[in-house]
Amino acid sequence: MKKPLWWIKMTNFEYWSFWFFYLPTVPYGLYLALRSGSLAYFTSVNPAVPLSGLQGQPKQDILKLLDEKYLPKSLYFKHNSDFEFVKFQIEKKQIKFPFIIKPEVGERGKGVEKMDSFKELQDYLNEYTKENKSDFIIQEFLKEPIELGVLYYRLPNNLKSKVSGEEEKIRLKKFRNSAITSIVQKEFLTVIGDGKKTLSELIGDSDRARFQKKRLQKEFAQEWNVTIPINKKIILEHIGNHCRGTKFVDANYLVTEKNIAAFDEIMKSLENYYYGRFDIKVSSMEDFKEGKGIKIMEVNGVASEPAHIYDPKTPILKAYRDILWHMKIIQVISFQNKKDGTAFASFSQIWKIVSDEFKKTFF
Image (cartoon, rainbow, N blue to C red; front, side, top):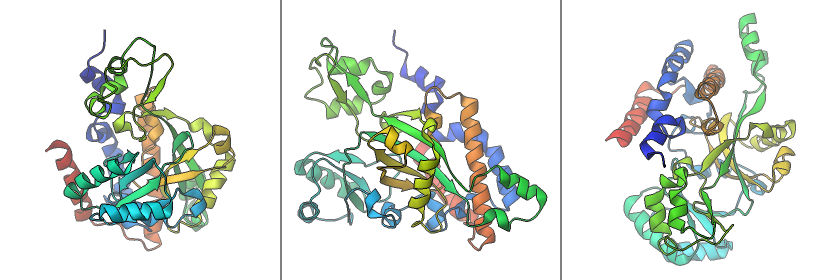
């Protein structure tokens, strides 16, 4: 007997709403705010971008600072760009199908789609320009088979030598100068045929796919009632976002001194950027362990979560412990940047963001 979706959501915290899941962390957040002297203590962790990338961080502002060898081919367009102009630029840049299109400013995979033809692109743009005022990016679809989310931090220059007092030095001793603190491997929503069941039935057998059934039925309308051959693998979603059915798997075992050094090198061009998650693709796990073949699709700021916690096998207490640890390292970096001249955001700025997000979620 299949479990009701409401029961799955209630008993698996990976499906809980952001507001409910993070509620137990509020007291610790208030403690860190008290120590820092501001509820917005986290907003100076990345002085390079407004509000440290809390919300509305333009993707290209960071990507354009990185060495091109780490990046897919990309094009940037104004939100009202004409289809023929977009098509011309794609052909000029020699970006082949399939490619990815996404809003310049966006969250949790909203508006991100894989394009397989100019007809799909034209249909997408017709809808996009009606509903959005955000500019958009077209990005080469990377063929590397493994997608990871890598959370990295580095302490501001010479932070440990700047602090005074034995207690403060002891407190900082437990933090490395730079580290990879979370790696999540993204397993795309997939079904495998058995030669008997239709695509609809295979989706019905997958709890994760059942959450996406309405959308998938529209996207796979022609194949919906087709029997899938034995061992045929169908990737239902190519976008690696949890809210679109991707399974997050704890891959912290992949952290090595070599890939930490690789991210140290990548970060050299990102001045005043100290904490964030890199969405990357790699050819193999061994390459990644060696710090080789890293391709960066996106960089996120202070709102980045240690996404390995959403592995279904992660105990909830461990998830909260890891979140609190990351809140602490954000406070350490941000408070030092404040001492060095980067002001915290105002309470009114933070309140507006929080209240707007609350309204979008519940009203």
